Image (cartoon, rainbow, N blue to C red; front, side, top):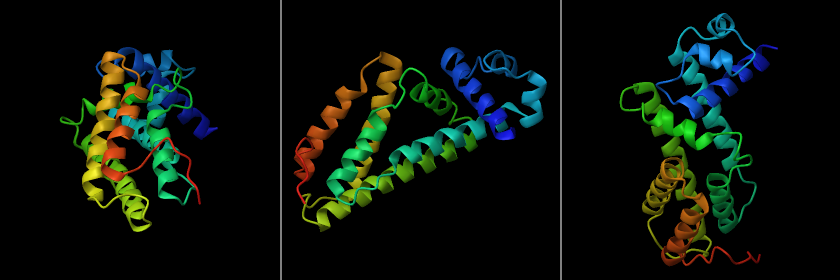
Length: 196
């Protein structure tokens, strides 16, 4: 029951962030978006910052799970990575890009948020750099600096989500451009089937 209650509070927080932004996030609005009372929310979370820290844990955990791939071929792993970052399993409901953007705007002022986003960025870069290094070692990708490719990929992904939230630009447009760019750098024909 306790985890269901916290999950409901987290879901309500997501909806409020998406509708009203960080500045409009209050315990009352979270209560209005869930079946919880403000007293019940305060029972689980003493402060808004504590609630947002758990909310951020939840978002990062869900995102990390999306990045997991059982594929061993670096080309398939890279394809799975892009599918995770550019495709939402439920685009109408989860509000992931909006919620993340709202919290990222607070990172310059909230050291804890900044640390969490730096950690997420480091993790994403490491995943991409490992995939690229493995692809070079296996002879699937051309020789290049895996860390530079990882920086390009994560910076492009961050920009794509900003453009999606701020300008309504579809993520698939940036996904296509990024794959074309990597084809030039890695010799990776992303649309082709992997043959073992």
